[in-house]
Image 1: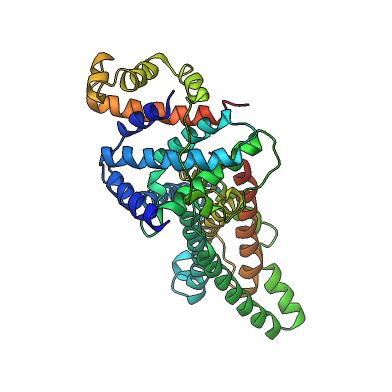
Image 2: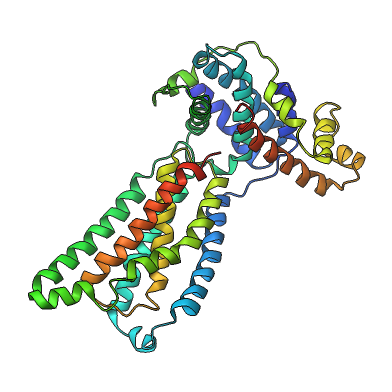
Length: 179
Length: 213
């Protein structure tokens, strides 16, 4: 538990300072935790697990400014995961409660096989063409942001802003995807 | 989309985050809201004619300090509740303490008055409009604050909404003091406090659906 915290928190701090590889590593490690955490709570609907992992990763990324440096990182991430799980249940009209103390469970978990998130693929298709092209170029072609921007006729700065907006749009639309 | 692809995508969107980004964003919103409420006080209600003399008295500032402290407790609670995994016990305790101390002062003042004088203190000259005015003045601030809190990550939307309403009500009540001539502990403890609490209640009710993310 302390080991996880002492791995993740430094990565979070580096990410907040603008270190992209550290941020990617943080999200990768976190995604394994989330997959196991949601997997055990959604055994009746395993198809939703990866969608929820992705929705939570987007939230962690877009709302990382709300992380208080004095706080354990795992407490912050667990609170977001728990909120997304309850929100999911509410949307699906399932009456269930996540115990507040399931943080221990969140910390101790084994990796599970991964599937593709169907919702995100579906939601991506609803984005405006320019945003979608930018996302596809970065994601599928593996282009850097400046290269992808160039293809769409955007400066690097404009591409940055456009990608951030696209991610916010994805997160917002994802919340309504399974209704 | 594969999760690893999503992670690559998110890693392409990494910019440094300022340490005080949350507080700064909330403070900017509060500043903008203050200007809106001030304009409303001046244009809709007008400043009290004896303002220049009132600011030389102590009670003008006691009243302002009370409502500003309630607003500060709300702001503090909003800053806490906008962050997942944190608790707002301390700001809530601070707000409750301020409220209790002021209500106690009002009780002592009320008990020291004779029956008719007590009724005059309770009603003042504006008891029928005071609470309503504060709630109306708080509304634009509340809208701005809720929009900002929505950008944070409140995991307890009702509590966060109440905090946003208490902050807006406290700040609005402080600025309302530029219009309202009432100058007793009894009056302020009753009708100002009620305005702040109702504003908090509206925030809680709105937060329930507005603070989902």
